[in-house]
Image (cartoon, rainbow, N blue to C red; front, side, top):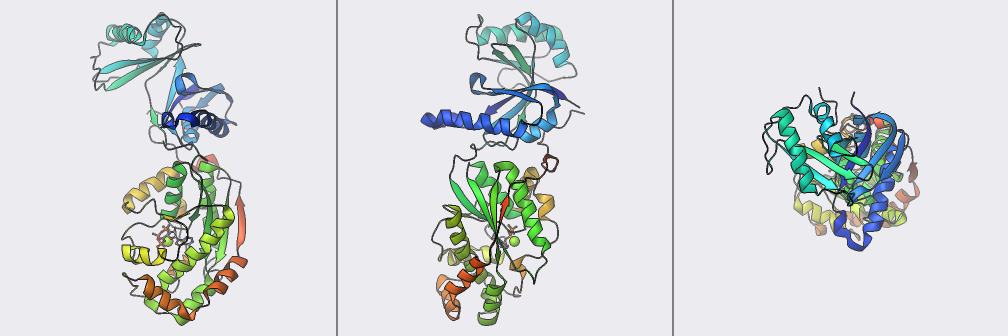
Length: 405
Ligand code: ATP
Ligand code: MG
């Protein structure tokens, strides 16, 4: 197992943020410290706008990378080694650091955070590059190297690395305001939540269920999904809303082909009331254009017509496979595919409408007492605080962080 005592990470987009930079820097440091706290963490420093993590004893790189890959704004994660204070020390370390590698070409890239170091980056790159050629006979390619040997000159010496694991990118959590995500037990909505969190938005969740007509296990499944997502943003709230009385009214009084869209309009009405309690400024859904009958552009518009806050649909243009890829990476896929009976598959007609309109849905709702149905559902909400994220072992190791075989 690859063990490390230092990890260097780069961050994303922070330079764009001008005046907020200090806040962002602090936030990222805190978030990294948070996920690594119980992993022999010694300190987190910021040389040359990077994040340098030191451990008090060797830790498995894959475990540290798994955790750092949940910190939005981290762009890349590198296991690095302090190879000493002089260029001779660096050259002496090359045989062990480059052993086993056989690139078709290479380049040396140097960063100086210690600006008092007497040689420039270019001088260092030339010197170490020449030593690599002497040692290995590799071909130099400065524009498209197969392998890059990275060096960082910091106050406490030279750091060297050749491996890089991609981080999640995005913006630090808490930098993008708050929203409320409609979380079903399916594959899509946890991915939509992840995409919003990636842009720094803090989420709370609302889930609609048809218990006792559906299995209460679907509630546990939703809690499990929220606990996975809590790994990426920390504590959140989940409102469990009973939808069954509303569904029964719709089934009894409205055209069958409009059922799903009418369920949806009630979900939105209720979710925006919950959002206002959570101080969420928008709703987030996992809808994707054309995926099912309710997700045509006409039907999305007909449902949205009763919304008073924006509905954000981060997956709107994605194919199912793209959504599944992200679900696997974030660790929700295995939970999402556990069998459950969704409230929207409850009493679903054979031929749902694919092109409804606001007028048609409003007409169908005339026989319903919308306000009292909404109030009744809200009175029946069970509020859950998700403060126990899943164990780290349930979060995937990011690609490239597995031990080299
Ligand atoms: P998912 O995989 O997220 O369930 P889906 O492809 O099954 O999505 P729909 O069932 O049409 O699509 O739901 C579209 C979106 O509406 C969901 O992504 C979710 O945001 C919201 N939604 C659907 N059902 C529920 C529910 N029971 N509770 C909360 N939100 C829901
Ligand atoms: Mg669904």
